[in-house]
Length: 279
Ligand code: ADP
Ligand code: MG
Image (cartoon, rainbow, N blue to C red; front, side):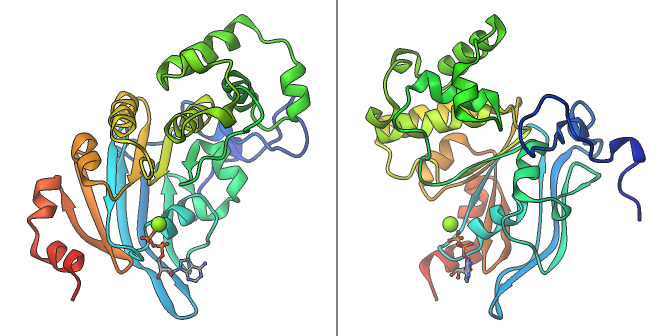
């Protein structure tokens, strides 16, 4: 089966440094989401030494949806994100971005360029640089740090950075060195850096772990403000947080979907109660 028409073949984008291949054109304004979903996982299996971390996993995420994923430790949540972002290859099954882009054919860096951003659990900002500089670097994309910081910002770039600062509530910290931010502020900065790349799909692994209650509340507001503009998949254990943001919740257990529905629905599900209480 041919998945791509010749005009969507991978070509090098002009003006990019290094070996970066521009793939954004594959999805710019043409990610095929006619069926309403931005991501499909079909019968995905991943084993580690015979242990099935993902076991015939089926899941799809709607365009602009904010989906929460919960499930006990070891359920396969992080492995699922590894598969979507190309860090882990599935043994079998399909992973599609829109209707036509088979993510299993791309490498990690390419998948990021296709428009899928991932926030790992630990913040990974440039600690020695200011909040503003971190966003400036993120906006520049895959270029050298030196070239990005030396380049004069256009008015448009400056406006984008200001909008990002506002979005992640770090306007007042713009000139602070990132290493001096609180844990929560670092997490918001990293979300801002992901947003600078304007991802269509954003994956967040336990974004509020280690945050104060006030920071958790602000993060809920932030994610709700992104809904509709981006599609989001959020893995989180903090049920108060899930309750604040979730519409649809998917419960993973033993590598596949155990239940799906509103938080109240899945919390009332006998099988869900059983996996959380242990057998
Ligand atoms: P969760 O994020 O839901 O807690 P994970 O996806 O991290 O679960 O892990 C699912 C299962 O797969 C766990 O039993 C874990 O030990 C195992 N696993 C994950 N990654 C690897 C790996 N690289 N090698 C071996 N086992 C792994
Ligand atoms: Mg995990």
